[in-house]
Length: 313
Image (cartoon, rainbow, N blue to C red; front, side, top):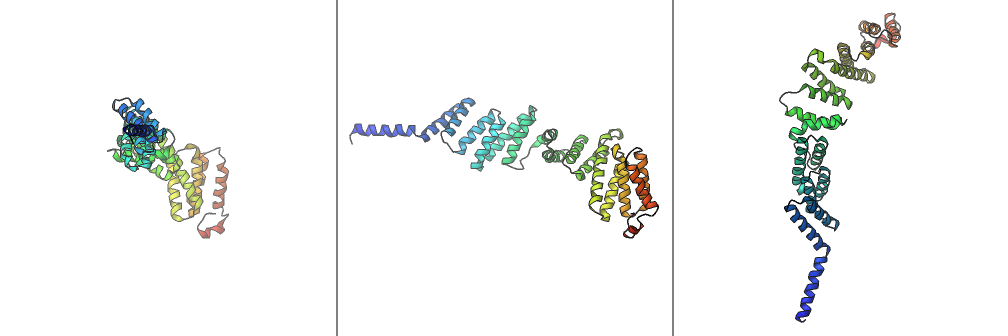
C-alpha cells in the first residue's frame, strides 16, 4: 500500500470513528463538562441530555444531569434522574442523597415545604432512615396540613424525640393525627398528656376529642365482647366521656351506654342510676324512652331469667 492510500485509509477510519454514535456521545458529555466547569448549567444540561438521547446508557451521565438540576434548584427533575441513576448504579446513592438533602435544607430556609418534602421523600426512597435534622417538625406539619396524617406521624415522633421539652401544640397535633387515621387508642394518650400540660380554660377542644374517642372505643369494646376485663375498660372509658362532659350532644348516649355496660356486668343498681341520668342529659331526646324501658326491665324484674348469667336483662 503506497503512502497516499495509507493516509487516505487512516483519514476514513478517524472520520468514521468521529461520526460513530459513541464518539458523538463522548463529545456531548465533554462539551457538557466544559460548560459545567464554566458555570453554564443550562448549556451543560443540554449537552448531557443530548448524550442520553443519542443512546448513552452510563448512569454516571444520568447522575450528571441530576446533579446539574440540583444545582439549578429543580427538585423534581433532580430526584427523577437520581432515582434512575442509582437504580443502575447504587454507588451513586451518596451523591444523590447529599444533593437532595441540600435541596431540602434550601427549601426549608425559603419556607417551601412542598419542595422540602419532595426532596426528603426521594432521599428516603434512596436511603431509608437518613436523618432529617431540624426538618422533622416542618415536614410533620406539612403532611398534617395536607391531610396526610399517616406520613406526618413518623416525623412528629422524630421531632418529639429530639425536643428537650414537649411543646403542648405538638402533643395535641400528634393526638389529632392518630385520631384522623382512626387510632383513638394512641390518640387518647396524647390528648390526655396535652390536657395535663395546659390550663383548665384551654381544655375545651381537647375534652371534645377525649370524650369522642373514649366513647367510640367503649362502644366498640362492648359491642364485640362480654369479656370482664374489656367491659371494665369500656366502663372506664365511658366514665371519661361523662367526666369531661364533651361532646355535649352525646352525653345522653354516654349515660345510656354506661347503663348497658353496667347491666352486662351485672351491676343492676348502678345500671339503673345510669339509665336515669339519660333524662337529665337530654331532656327531649329519643333515648329517654329507651332508657326508661331498660330501667323498668331491671326494676320490675322483667328479664330476671337472665340474672343467672350475671346480667341485668
